[in-house]
Image 1 (cartoon, rainbow, N blue to C red):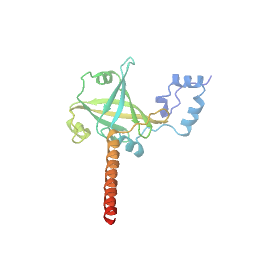
Image 2: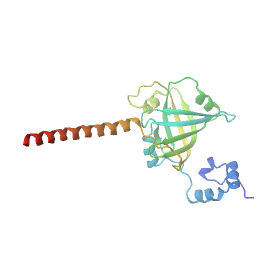
Image 3: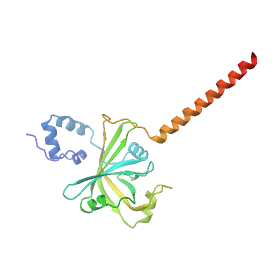
Image 4: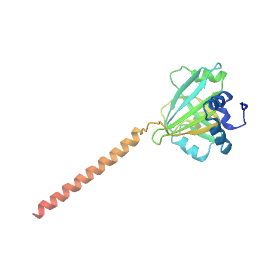
Length: 211
């Protein structure tokens, strides 16, 4: 039996010993081993990834308690509210909400976290592993992270240190479109229809006047 020890790859953050054993038992371990040997997962935010993040208006944040109880929370705001601070750090303002503070409580005993980014329109998803910390009493940082003109009350800042990220395949992602984008296209189409109707009416009047 092959050794399941940590191979020293960045992707080991997800491919733990138990995961590798599961992959080996089901016949996929060699494929993933060859893939990461050829190209391991990135641990720094590339320019392409930064551009992808800047277009997102929501993401899912996962934390867990000390005993492993998971919790997933939706985070939303204007496009770009999740900000790239440097090649290893993401930041976002924590808005006042339902006051359950599950994520805050989890982070007090386990700083491991996960960010899951979805682009439904282009059927793309990116998974980000890392460590998260809440920053209290730093108004300058909060101001830096707060979207301009956004009507929400920030309570603190969150800083996420990237350990690894990976792009998932598009399989089974339902294609969905942003309502504002759909309305923009609909309004454009409606304006074009009205313009064509006016042109038809003008030509009709000219035709009648020539008779």
